[in-house]
Length: 512
Image 1: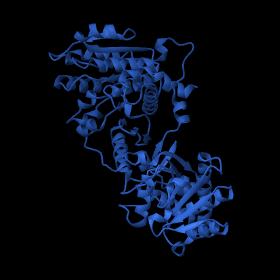
Image 2: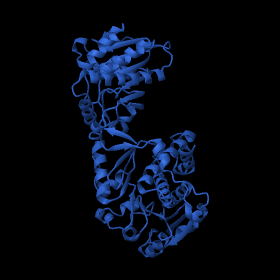
Image 3: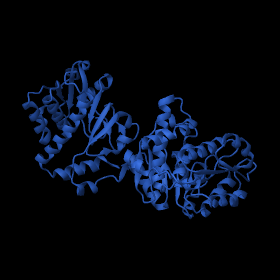
């Protein structure tokens, strides 16, 4: 797992690790600069390919820039280093880095006017070392002018630690803010790098570990993590060469209503594509003829319905009997907001004894009754988007770290797993642990996409995944399927059915 930090947490880790010792601080700066220089050399492997500009601010971010410039100069690169303040205003580690760079006969120019940068077209890459992670508010003066000039050019920019002008907690860009192609961040990735609109300013992000003392790190991390590829691979349930369909998991679903048949089709097909051995789909009786023509692999069960064609309270016992044959249950996709149907959902949840996924209208059934989610026997996983969450509880705070804290506390208080759908998706487990999953693409913002995710997750639970792992792995597979579909069709043309067909591509990323 990749740990995330807030700006304040990172500042504390840095300060406590250095403890006022400039020599120690400079050793961290040297390692950070080496990591950035290596990144530059991977982007521009040929020192003779063109000139590189490094633009430095007055703080330690500028000091990192001077270290990068020196290392690149030593490696044979042509470097032009700019500063937005006079060298006599540099202190501590930044001053040491500047003097070390100048001792290597490096070029340096103080920018009194943006015109001093000259034509940017002469540079093959620009390194942004202007501002660090503590910025709040909009920019002005020469720094703002330089950033505006960078953004108007077509030259790729690599940002050190964070694009200058980006609020690393809120993911909000100042005016102006560097729009980087690459960001090399120090120590730990920052929360704001994962959330839009800030994420679009970060570009490709990598992290340079700085070997801070573990005792200091543990007390200052945000508690929020990003799973890595190896984590997802370890979660994938093993196939059983000797097993029958029953050994690979049975799912029971209540999905669909008049006008919302597609939800039932997408969710059940996604469950089968993800690997469970059997799906029992309970849907209003009048939908069965259409469903029979669409779902040749799914076992269909017609249930009592309301006059509006939604699941009726009279179907309670029939569905409970189906759940007794299953290892996981899904309720909600496309079943409507009908009052009787919502009452049925709340009644079923109190009685079902196997892990349960509530999606869409299964969640909406608890509008005005959120405390009733605690009245259940089974493990519970819910998959709300922002609107469903707000109807059930209240809108989340706009600040990402605060939103994550609310999700973690709610998951812990209710003893359930939450998959808060969005970009990124946030998962909180029953212990209150929070994960950010920056996966997928805009093509997945399409009707029925959530139904596919629900089918994937419930299938994984039926195959033996814990609810937490099913949430994490399910979101990953959903995103990977979306990426595969978009690669073939473009993000404009992806529809939910394409995601179902591409689930195998997501699984292949973990098994290849």
